[in-house]
Image (tube, rainbow, N blue to C red; front, side):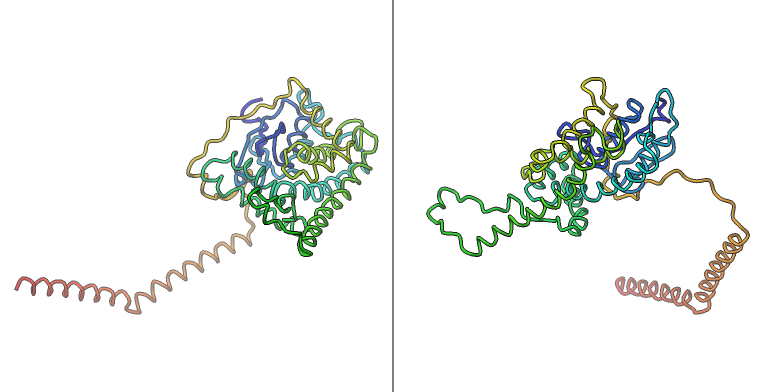
Amino acid sequence: MSQSSQLVLHVWPGQWNLPSIDPSCLTAILYLQLAIPGNFCISECTNPDLSPTGQLPFLTHLHNNISPLPPILKYISACLPSEKLPAPDLDSYLNASEKSQQVAWCAHVEANLGDLVMHMFYSLNANWSRLTYTTIANMLPIPQRYYVPARMRESYRPRLEAVQLWNLPGIEQEEEKPHFWEREKLREPTESDRKEKFKRVFEREKVLEKARSSLDKYARLLGEKRYFFSDRPTTIDVYIASHILLLIDAPFPDPLLQTLLKESYPTLTAHARQIHLQAFPATGSNIPLLPPQSYTLRTLIPWPPAKTRKSKPKSKSEDDIRFDRMRWGWIAVAVFTAVFYIAQSGIVEAVRNLDNVDEEGEMLYVDEDEE
């Protein structure tokens, strides 16, 4: 594939044996690897401003820049099957009813399972300070690493606050055990302490209940089947697997939902492992990786997002031409009026007189000094 026709997927870098730390980026990678293996390459990117929508992932092909995730999958699935691309559309085997159901399920996954992933990475303080922050900071150059992670966390805050998943009590907010030199100061917990501890337990249980309500639906939909809608992976399989993989593979200091998944939903975890293994078999599955981007002073400036392919200029109608003429005529009249007003009001003459007075004053001052 020539350089100009190369499919390049720009994604957040990977960690923990996963090709990306972002669920949408991981979904795109798994989909392309299952649909068009060996026919695309990855460019690790830590600057979402390069995307036409200001978010990763985005796909570049020919003169097209495609983002976010749904248009990327639609663009790939619209490719005509060929020897190099035998099945670019993972959903081609589904009937109309299954396709409509899948669209609804994918939206459900992005909203609900996506909230749980963001809660684990960005809301729980132990996970944020000891895992997410350090992971993202190590991917960024100086000085971006000092402010971009916090900016990213704040960007997720409104979304998580709306579903009551922001800054809930975590294990790091439990009472710390006193140091040995403080043991003599131990006291019996007060009623207020017991109420606060009960509140922490109650809030964490609310998160677990919210997670169970979504995970139960996915587990029932999967049942004992290998895949959700067919005898082969479809888009919904990739969506769910990418979120589950991040929840079970990231080394969370506070493994709240990780423990729930591994202990209570073995079918979902096994399904996610199967999708990952199918996309990346033991051998011969490495995706070509473009050289890392270089950073200059230009990257410190928040440039507007890259524009998509420019469309050909459209011929203007007579009304548009008349409107343009009227607009330029109005501008010309306004400029002429301003110039005429300045000339007639004596402003220019007053400025000249003021300059002459200043020059005479300077000359007088010089003469006095000479005397």
